[in-house]
Image 1 (cartoon, rainbow, N blue to C red):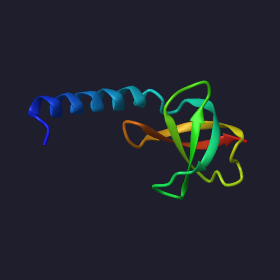
Image 2: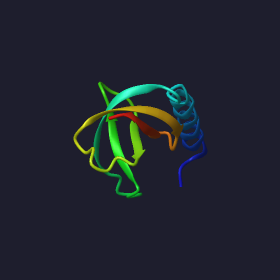
Image 3: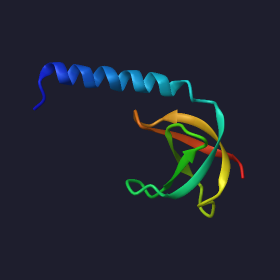
Length: 88
């Protein structure tokens, strides 16, 4: 088990990351759709251009390898956000 200081540091960093991701909600951006998310096959992974957090998309069948416009809808984890395709 980690020592208490390491645990507190990890919690503080995680909280800061979630706070920074909140500012993404409602934004529209271009992203390239990749394959299925292996932990939940209902979603596809998308990578924002030119950079940004990894996005989970529902309903992206047939868009693999294509650039789409995505609106960010929620924060899933400190490393993942969810979005919807707004323009194909």
